[in-house]
Image (cartoon, rainbow, N blue to C red; front, side, top):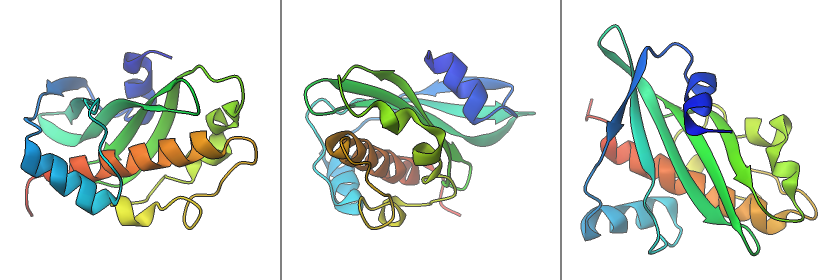
Length: 156
């Protein structure tokens, strides 16, 4: 799946998606690590779009990648304007095992969760036997993106 396809699936009400390029300085990376309680990899460089309709922010689409067991897993997450997950799409899964994370039931576990503390692996998000590292690493990736979206959203 391509990112533009994921954008339309995750936030179909959006009229267009505006690329956002925040500066992820050491302070922001430290805040993401602290809030998500994960290590932020040196390769952390998510692609971010703000979803807009009728001139109003409708949410965010953030695409990133994590290492599975041996290879990259590319994924995109849709967030509401309030920062809650509206959906997760697996863009590319390259591992030989664990592709079950592409199943709707596993991805749906994230829907409605807001903030990295609401999506802890093995507590809030269940594991799939045979796909443990994929499940854990994608969950951690989504936690980081949730923390990032929290930093992007204007204070209310």
